[in-house]
Length: 416
Image 1 (cartoon, rainbow, N blue to C red):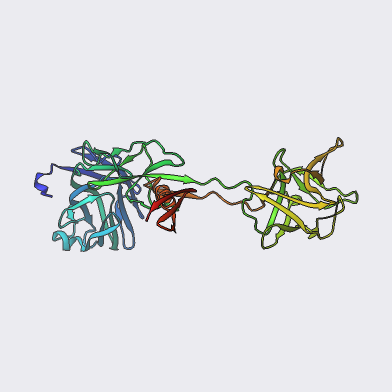
Image 2: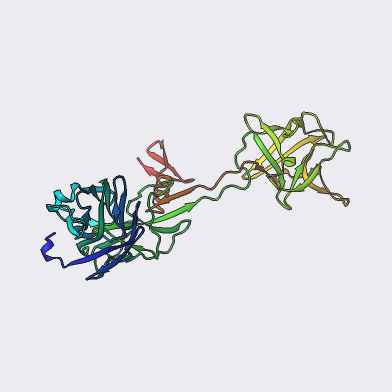
């Protein structure tokens, strides 16, 4: 950049107290500039071991041409080290005495001490610190000569599609990020500098829509979308573990251990209620299981059509998210049923059923799965890949002079 072509401005920070400065400028100050000052002694005076720090933030990428700190000393002494940091990195240091810098000690007049040998571009944060080494130095003010940042253009991408471009009206002014509609199963969350082509568990930096974004150069932002899987309420895969056994029709769950009358309690389903917890162990094929009350390891079994506290092998019906436990007695099917009611209140017992596949019972884990959150800049890309793979999953069987093609359940013949 040719700085001679940049219209320079000056901003002055005059020390008012140990923790405040006043601000003045001959041009438009950087948008949203943040100013903080702190001196460990008093006002601008720095003795040996004291530190005075001016910190500027949200400078919007200005070009700093010159920094001068107006300083005086004691009559015959005064030394320290100036340090200048830009965007967290040290760009300049100056150590010595006032006599080294201006040719004499002076406890009356303030002298400008230049801290930069060359201009610095893209300044977002600026810290000027004086650490005293010999009593004493005293700061009157900081004078910073700067040029506004050039106006930058931000390209906004919506997947592979160009959504649009936005250019700052003035350098450092920033742009307002727009909002986008959300495709099926995904939620638009904002914009990112990183192009996430695959699905990831988290996004490093996200800029929400409606916020002001300050580009430091011409750059591209990518729309980011979030997907949250819906955890299964009821178990679709049978794995041995701790569960509650639920009647999904009225949300009643089996509770406690068998009574002497061959029944058990029933209660409103609640995975936090340990009285409803049962340890269920399935065999390898998942078609039979044992059930134990988790709190005391008391078995839940059957004797005839009554529930008893003995180990029994239950037959398992499982389809989708439905699971039912039952036994066969004299050719009839008796199902373990939470919510049985014969007019005297609900309980858990064995109920005769004609078609176990119509059961409305299910298992809920006492440690339910959590929602899985994923992010990507290309929602639907993985689905497209999976769909394409499914479509191309074709089986070819030689059949004389023909080939039998089987794809997605459809068959057709082709000449070889």
